[in-house]
Length: 247
Ligand SMILES: Nc1ncnc2c1ncn2[C@@H]1O[C@H](COP(=O)(O)OP(=O)(O)OP(=O)(O)O)[C@@H](O)[C@H]1O
Ligand SMILES: [Mg+2]
Image (cartoon, rainbow, N blue to C red):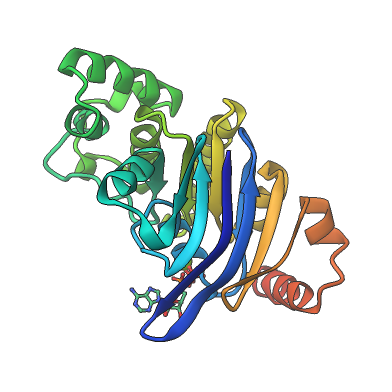
């Protein structure tokens, strides 16, 4: 469904992603973990071409692209196959919840207003926000705003949803409702790539954990293999530090 081969990205001569190879199957949840500055966000951004890799190949939804010679049209196609949910929800402040969800469907996908409205209602229901469809972002909690942005991602029916630390900006008591929505999305069979520091959630929800270190995939495996059986020193150091900080 999604494969990356030999992906390389540098900023100003420094190698941020170095030879990334990764496969995500349809309906899988693949979670990226690892120290700060290690390239997790950059990797997600390369998949939807918010960053342009120096070289490498991506296959997504049956199409193959060579990053070093991707055309504008191909870039647009690739972007349309993905949706991203950011730490900051990036909703339009002057639009209601449902208008925010409708926007890309009408502007990018050229759906009619009626069609976009119906789809948006359906997705807002899915994240438990049917009572808030006409609220403006300022009238919603952080958790609710993030759920609107999840509905917005679902509404364009992407091949894969990319979540970049979707709960990091939230007050602790709001984290649970957003994780619950992500879990619903996962259960519905959506293919997901997730960056999170919520380790117990990652363990529960993921089919595969990818540990990144210094721009490389240091280790990947099932949650059990990474969290309980890893013999990789860097993985162990990271997890130990993490658990010490949390507990
Ligand atoms: N637009 C940019 N220009 C220059 N350097 C960048 C840019 N974006 C990211 N970097 C650098 O690339 C490296 C990887 O950054 P990235 O944001 O992908 O890390 P991360 O793993 O997501 O970190 P965190 O856990 O803190 O979010 C860092 O060294 C960062 O400073
Ligand atoms: Mg990041």
